[in-house]
Image 1 (tube, rainbow, N blue to C red):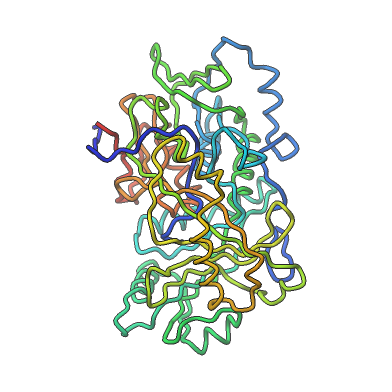
Image 2 (image 1 turned 45 degrees about the vertical axis):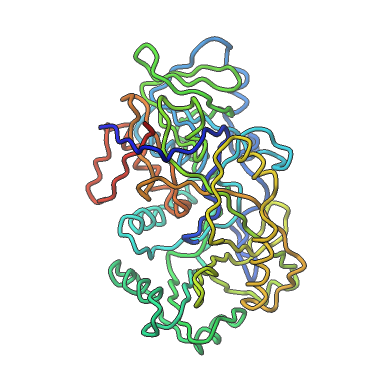
Length: 459
C-alpha cells in the first residue's frame, strides 16, 4: 500500500546530495594513523571504473539499452545494491556520475561519499540500526579482499559523556545499548581517559565507553570504489551519467539521462540520496527532508602525527548537549595531507530548492559553525594548531520514519533506496543488500528487522 504523508514535502531539487555529516554521529598504516585515501576515485578507468570507456563507445543515441535490473545512483547505497544484485543475477547496470573535480565551480549533481572518514561502530540505541551496522561491518574484510581496495580503519570508537548517576543519561543509555547488543566495551573514568587518550581533555566528571573492535572509521570514497570494483568484476555495467527520469513505459521501467540516453529494465532501484526528491525523477514525489551541514578540518603536519598515535573515532556529549560533536582521527585526504575532522552542529537548516542546494555546496559551509568547532577543539585537543582550519559544506537526508526508505513507488517496477538519516555510511552495505533483495524478491524477506522501511510519498 502507498503510504502518504501530507503537507511536509520538500521543494524539488535537482542534484545528488547525501549524508556527509549528520548530528547523530555524529590502507596502509602511517605510523600514527591509517592511510586509506590518496585521490578521488570513480573518475576514470585507472581508478577501477573500467566500463566508462565502453559506455562512451558502445552507446548509440536513440536506442534503449535493456537490462534486468538498473540501479540509479552510484553512491554508498547504490554501489552496494549493485554488488549484491550481481551475486546471482546477470544484466545489472549502475548509473551514476563521477565525482566533480571542483566543487566550487561544479554545476552538476553531488553525492554523499566525497570524503575520507566517517565513524563506524556497532553500538546503537536502536536494534535495527545496530543490526544494519553489524552486518555491514562483518563484510568489510570480504569487500576489501575481493576489490583490493582498503577503506576500513579499525581504530576503535570512544563515546564520552557525563558520569552515570549525575543526572545525565547519555552514557547510561550507551551502556544499556552495548549490554543489550552484547558488545564488548571498556568503561573509563576521568583518570583512565586521561591516561589512555592523553591528547583529549574532557570536562571533569566524565565517563567513556570504548569499543575497541569492529569500530573506527570507513573511507566512504574508497568504500564506493571497492563496491563498484567488485560489482564490475561480477558483470555489472556502469554508466557515467545522470538519471533525470524513471518511469514505467510500455510495461518496462525506463530511465532517461541527462546525456540523452535511454535505458530499460525489468526493475529499477533509485538510490540517489537527496536527489531522490528531484522534480520529475520518480513517478511521485518522495517525502524527505534535506539539511545543510558544515564540517571542519584541522590539518595535522606529518611531524606532528605522532602526538595522535592510536586516536580512535570520538563521539562526545559534554554537559551542554548542544556541544555534542563527533570527531575522526587524522586521515590522509586526496591532497596528500592529513586532517582531523569534526562535525555535529546542533541546528537543522533546511535546504529545499535546487538553487539553495547548489549554492550551499559551492559556498563551502558556514563560517560561524566552523568557528564554533574551532572553539571546541581549543579545549578538547589543545595541542592542535587551530590556524590550519578549513571547512566543507554537506547535507543530510532524513525520512519521516527515521529509517532508510526501501520500497516501491506506485509502479511495481520502480523502487527507492534512500534516506540515510545521518547514520548510514557505516551501514550502507547492508542497506544496499536489502535494496537488492527488494528488487529480486519483490519485498524485503529478512524477518530480523522490525523497522518500517516503507517509503513515504507526498500527496
